[in-house]
Structures are given as structure tokens and as C-alpha cells.
Image 1 (cartoon, rainbow, N blue to C red):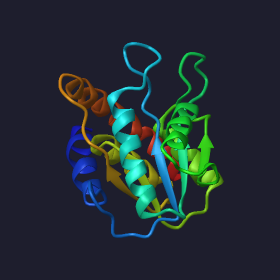
Image 2 (tube, helix red, strand yellow):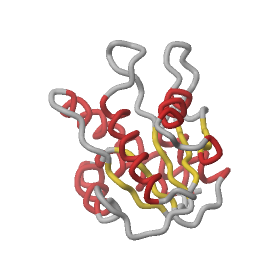
Image 3 (cartoon, one colour):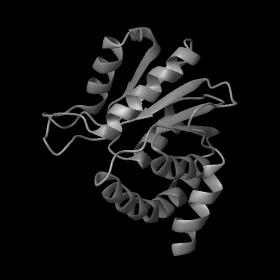
Length: 181
């Protein structure tokens, strides 16, 4: 199990991630939600850095729709609504934005994409460590995807983020089997 989660997934899927540019012409950009900060209602650093990268990619691909994937089930903080409001305030037109407000995990985001979008080339936006897992799950689901990494969060939160991602990669192996079928 350790080999798969700590060596295979990061090494195998790192080649599908580019932090500055991408070589594919995407038909869909997917911005993954990032939860909320310790304060409660304010977006966290991961969220802010992902938004920055989404804005950069929108400028590069202005005609490609942007799917916001996250959960709006929390009354205090609604991920996709917060993402949409932020992107609209930064000038992205409403008709370029799609919302998946039902996904509370990377697994459910990938499952939603598989069921609802027939894009040939999908470009995921997240931090690198999360992209490894998202790309692994997409591959299991038969989705052709690449990733663009947003800036890493600062210490000491980065250490927590790495621990969380290691645990999530273990779970993703079992989730990937479900997506495979």
C-alpha cells in the first residue's frame, strides 16, 4: 500500500502536472473546492491560490468553460457559490462558469464529471499534492485529464495538508476501484 500511495501515484501523475503552462487545449477547466479556514467563513490559502490559477488559465483559454466543484451543503460556507462570486468579481463572465455544488470529495467530483461532461481534454486546477490524487481517480474513471498546480500553501499548514493528502490517497485507491467499474 505504501508503495502505491507514496511512490507510484506521485511519480506516475507528476508528469501530467505543469505549474505554469499546459500543452493541451482543454475543453473544460475544473476548479476543485478547498474548504474553509479555521476562522470559519473565510476561504483558506489553498482556495485563494486556486482562484489565482483559475484566473490565469481563463485568460489563456477565454472560451473554455470553468466547472467549479465543491459542496454547498454548509450554511456558513458554500464552496461553489464563494468560488463563483469571487470569479465574477474578478471579471469572468457568468456564461463561462458551471457549478457542481454537490461534490463533497474529490471522488464525488470525478464521479460527477464522468456522468455529466463529455470533454475530451480536461484540465484540473489544484495544489500539486491534490492533483496526484485527482488525476489517479480520473484515470480510473477513464477521463483524459491533466493538471495545473496552484501555488503551495505556507507552513505550518502545508505539513497538515501533506498528512491529509497521504491519508486521502489511501482512500482513493479503494475509490478508484469503484470508478474503474
